[in-house]
Image 1 (cartoon, rainbow, N blue to C red):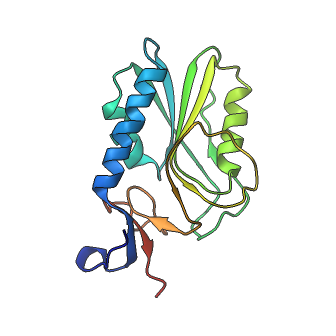
Image 2: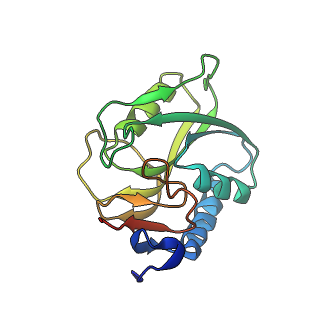
Length: 182
């Protein structure tokens, strides 16, 4: 599955998931969400900036009414590994009591960020909460977190592209890849 990388993608050691693989999976994930939430309006909580591409592609496939909320929350702070400190931008007027909530993120790594967000949303007593991630790393989690839908399971490697970055770079790659260590 891994291909040699040249040109625009020269900073990648290899492509992990092609744009076509990602789009095929996103369409299937949206179909499942359309089934699960049929007849209901969903409050979508999207974690930015890493999930930007995933959220945009997934939402365009949804055939249910949605109300989109974007949040900034992360624990990486520019490095290759989680710092263990979750920073979150939570608007004071954001309330999910009695609502169906769909939490979208790009990647499940340590579980810390998603568990903090799920706890905060659950404290508001939503009617339902479903968490969906594009990627889940095969690794031990710092905190256990419930994730109902996973696009792809990947090895415990640092990935970029399709919204995910390293120090602000590589978000615009249409694929997901592994950076060249040099």
